[in-house]
Image 1 (cartoon, chains in turn green, yellow):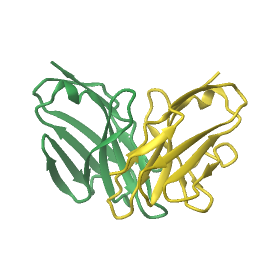
Image 2: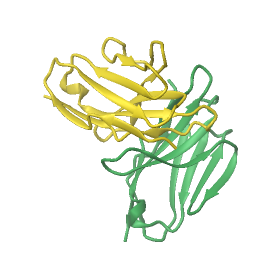
Image 3: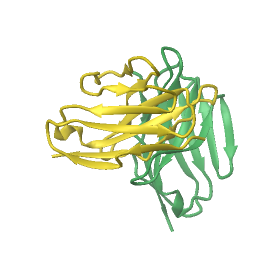
Image 4: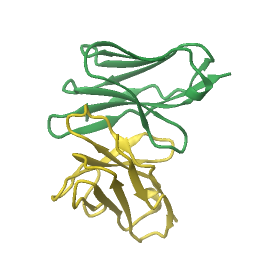
Length: 112
Length: 115
């Protein structure tokens, strides 16, 4: 069973702090890694994607990938109350058919 | 990006009935998927909707319960058959373009309540 594991939280951080979200995956054949944000009652929306080992930065967001450790993380700098949402880690596999598996999500609360 | 429209957005159904959810994408996409999100849970992949052929179902989901159609590159339907209260969930249609890195676009979801 291919799995994507996340700490469900909730993770609570003060406004302006760095929020760190973590994810591990079981399938070494995974090729693409994504972070989606889901506000309550809404559909997921893509925040970041990363394919190669290392860091990728986009504005206040940084995704980190370590394929050897099968570990993906998302850092949110200068957290804002509007960042309060559930963050879903997702892993896409291509071998055996293209499909994306989601983690359980981490609920983030940013306190004003 | 792609804009995905789903309908119905919500429905309340009686046990034993069936409901078909429609998904329309505003442009051609390579792949379409159906996910289920139960209350407070993450997304579980039901199946990949294959254009012009039978859908590919994930473990725990079967065609008799969740028949899927995809007659062309922009449209798909999911039917939830012989519903029970355990089928109460949000059903999400999603799509991806090959070569676009695997990003998924989502519809707004169909919230289904079975009494």
